[in-house]
Length: 151
Image 1: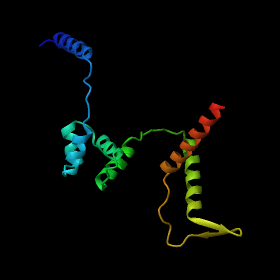
Image 2: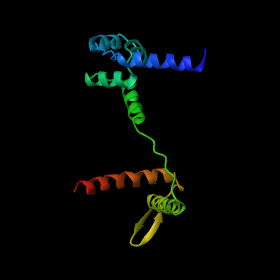
Image 3: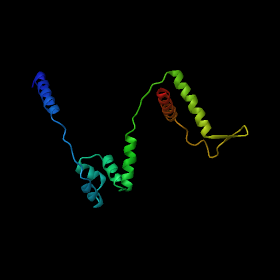
Image 4: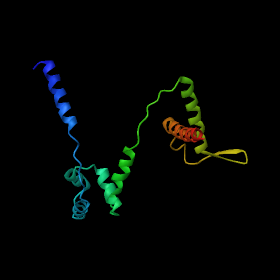
């Protein structure tokens, strides 16, 4: 089949497909609750009703139905709602981030009393990553910037 024929068929298909409104689906919560109470898993409910697991769990929790599986799925779903942001910093800003990270790490692992610095016992413990510090700084800066812009 020629390339132009394929393109023509694809274009016709898209045109026909785009004209049709997407079907609206009604959710029968009674059936979902009934099947869940009968012991059907969240995954099986999701497959049967064509709804994402996270949405099934949110619906069940709205009806005060909870279980460990529902709570774990909701927690995982909220984590999945976060968006990743990839940044590249100039060298001087990266060095500044390293310095700030070291300072934060030092503050977390030590305490000062009467101008005498004490390190916490039990070894160095987990250190704070540059990504965590950068995230805290960026979130704080975004909130402050939003407040300033509103004024």
